[in-house]
Amino acid sequence: MIGIKIKPVSVNEVWQGKRFKTKKYREYEEELLYLLPNLEVPNADLCINLEWGFSSKACDIDNPIKPFLDVLQKKYGFNDKQIYELNVKKKICKKGAEYVMFNIETFVVR
Image 1 (cartoon, rainbow, N blue to C red):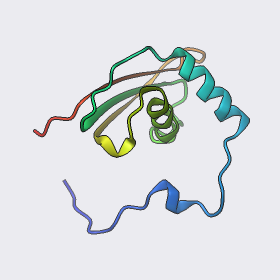
Image 2 (image 1 turned 90 degrees about the horizontal axis):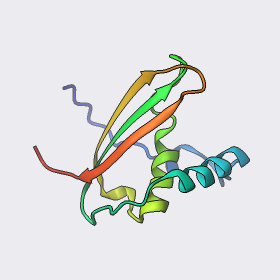
Image 3 (image 1 turned 90 degrees about the vertical axis):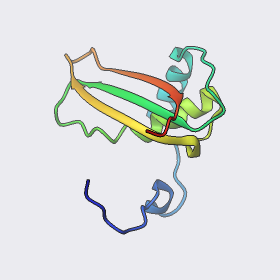
Image 4 (image 1 turned 180 degrees about the horizontal axis):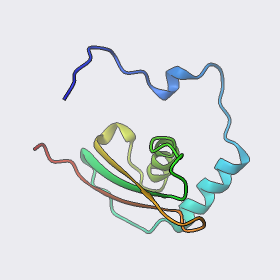
């Protein structure tokens, strides 16, 4: 593993001024809140596993993470500061068959 001594920059620090949700994001949030199953999320440090099914190899693996996590927080009532591990995979699927798979579990120090 390579170590770089630099303080990470948060999404809140990279944009200047007020950000507004787009119509597309509001629709995505509404649909996702409806589709997400009811789950009990532990009030603990968390590990989240994500698998994106993209129909294009050009899709960036990191772009959908923040909006998806924000909706998960809203649905399940946790704070993203509780996330201590995030595992993300990218798979290619047919156009029209895009998906996301996820699970939320208690973080365990290994």
